Image (cartoon, rainbow, N blue to C red; front, side):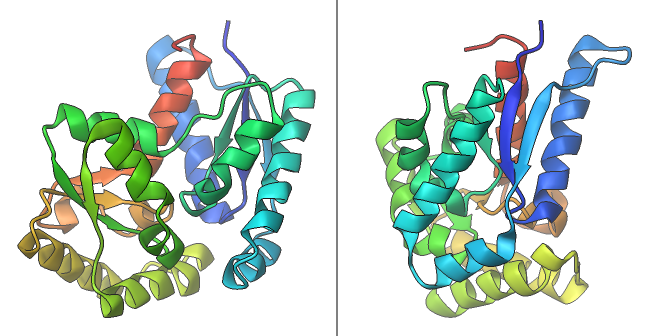
Length: 233
């Protein structure tokens, strides 16, 4: 029996659409035929979320995510998937609100890096993901992997591209080239791999676009969701 997933999405809907596609394809690939995922989706209005992020109102955002997770649990979801790296800043609020598990985005990426023997990885994402400690600390604590981030100018550029382009469905060659240059600078700083730490970045670049091995958090998160849905712990 396929277990019911509860997705908190819309942050942005461009990447949430990728979650829907990858999870359904993952179920189909494993079970064959016409099989697909069983999931509920609460798509949050992203404008309100972005305003609260800019204002640093993470407590309010935590309450918003907790309400969403609780609603999905009440509707029958058996696990929660937050389709955003940044919003894992408030993952604890979700965990505290529900009795069902949260499939945390850091963990499947950490396992993949660990399996690949990576000890130091560069992280790109929103400025919140790059500058707040929640991502780096969980990776270090659970997997012993050191996470480094770009310099201030590169962080500002990556953040701008995510919000002003990728979240709006704009995919530009110039931005792809700029991200590749960021990856090169991270490699020069000792990074052995590049973490695509925003669920939209995979829309812009893939492994062939950068000099480092690229680990797309969206893909690993979706694979973990498929594992859970098909009965893995």
